[in-house]
Image (cartoon, rainbow, N blue to C red; front, side):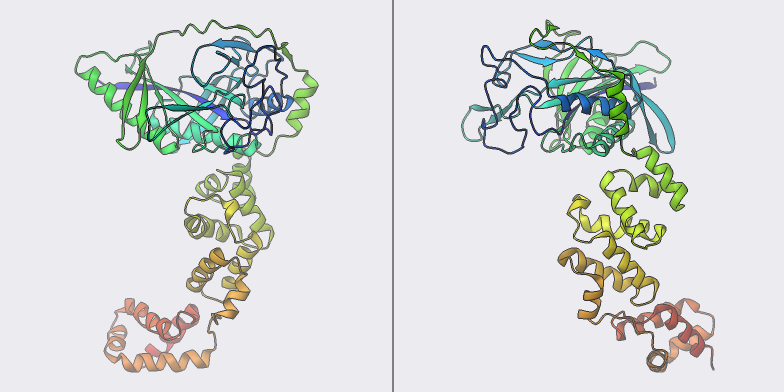
Length: 475
């Protein structure tokens, strides 16, 4: 029996505001425990929340970026449940009247383009955080995160594989970063994801029994967790068993999931409209004002890179995956570089040297990279020497001109000087020279390599090949 995978994702994006959603406390990450708190976010009796206007603006931005419906009339609701890090005993969220309705995003997996529906997005406040003591069997409550604004983005169950789930997650992450409304840091918890997954026999319309996966703090973990759960559910169904509806925690160290709790079809959250907050009414004029602030989004930028810079789709996709990478590329082009050369260098040397760090931490400015590539183009240095220079630039932040001069790395293009060395090498390797003349042309690499050793990689490779070919052609 063959099965179809059905996945839906719930993404919680911490919005990049300076203050919390209903009070003026700072949202700065890493402050001492319980220092960014006040009577409002601590849920003290008698206090009243005041909605942060920037949160509404950010939600509208994300709605517009996904072609979603902006609900001009929306309302906050109380979601009642009890947990140690929820001081009020309820979470102020949105229920039947969210700020954003249906929309969609496009993803591309293995050359296949698919549309994934967005069910809704709603504003809500975050809960606090439990810190488990490593030495004693106790947990401490840090309420700094309480009241931090979140945008929950709920997908339709349109995702059909773990690869598609990863692609959708990366697309939402990219949009949030392009809009500059979420820093997207999964390690710090400002971009979190829960996944609902089920299997059903191919051709069946009804969904299978789903499980929910939590505790996935990287794109890789999301894909690994879903692949594991597909295998687990498939084995159960093929053995004639039934999948139990439950919430699972992903353990990346053991590469498996483990049950957290059973899950009912519906939680008894006892939602009701929040009596402390008036409904939010959004004018068409405000929506249009926000629309005018939208930047060029990833898909639009990708299309422009292909058309304007004649880049292959693969290059354009990678270069526009993050706003900062796309900005760096364009700044380098504007500094005088050739687009395809810059693209090749960024996708190999630059991203490798960054070792996973953000390009914003790169010590090499775009104009410096353009200057380095121009030196290669003008035969001032060889491509091999350029890689060495670039590594030094990444470490020290110095300009390529300074490093080349300081380390005497200028390419040797003096024909007389190189010719003398070429003749010496041919004389010292007469048997290889004879083999070359007898048709073993691959030996050219050997001769050029010998010259590079003598010049410490500074010989002009094009001139070197020409000189060897000329000299080796003589009997």
